[in-house]
Length: 311
Image (cartoon, rainbow, N blue to C red; front, side, top):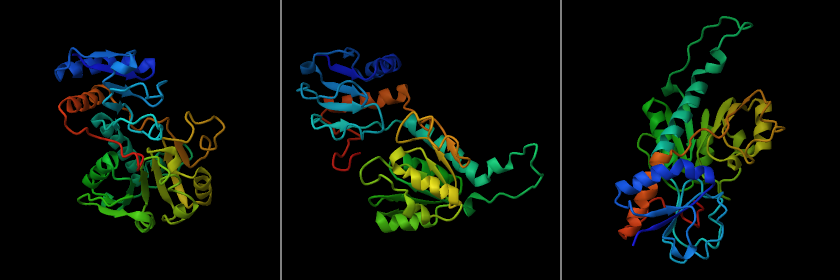
C-alpha cells in the first residue's frame, strides 16, 4: 500500500517543496507515495512539518510513525504534549554550507578590520598590517552540526578556535570546553564569538551582563543562532561602554525586528534579516526521504530530537 505523506506547512512552502520531495521519493523507490496537503489524520504515515503550520494537535494521527521537521529549530514544538511520536529536526547539508559561508565572511570582516579599511572622503590614508589568522582567538558557542562545521572551516583558515558546548564534545584541532567553568574560560579569550547554540531554557541569555564582561574589551559578536541567546539590554550597554566593539545579529527575539528597535540605529550593530542559513529544498528533501526510508526499513531515524534537552 502506498505511503501517505502529509505536508503540513504554509502554502508557499508547498510550492517550493513539492517537486524536490517528489523527485527524492521517486529516487528512493517511493514514487507511488501519496504526498498531499490534506490527508485524513488516521491514514497519515509521516508528517513533513513546519512549526508554524496550522497543525498543532497531533492526537488524531494514530498511525503516524514520525514527524519530520523542515526547520533546524524545534523549540516551538518540543513542548507540544500531543506530539508523542518520534520528532526529527532538519540537518540540511545545504543549510550547513550556507551557514559556514556566512559566518566565515563575517569572522573575516572583523578579523581583517574591513569596515575600518574602507576609505571614505573624510578618511585619512593610514595603511596598517592586519594580524594573521593564527594570531586571532575565535570562540564558537555550540558544537552541534552547524557549530562543528563552522569551527572546522575556521581551523582550516588557521584561526585559533575554541569551542564550547553544554556537554563534552571533541573536535580535532580545537580546544573544546563545556559547562559553566568552561564558558567562563572560553569567553575570557573570545576576540570574536560566534553563537550557534539551540534555543532552550538553559541557553537563554547565555550572553548577559556578567558573561559579556568576561570577554576581552573590544571583542566582536556574531549571532546567527537564536535571538534569545543574548540579553539585548546587556549587549546594548556593553556596546555603549566599548566592552563590545561591534555585533552582527541575524536573529532576534521578535522577527521581523520591530522598526523602533534600538538595534536598527545603533552605530555598532549590523542587522541582517535572518539570512545566515536557509534550508535548501533539494537537499532538505533528500534528508526527509532518507528518514522515511529508514522508518520503512525499521532502521533508526537520524537527527532525532531529545525532548529532555529540547533539541
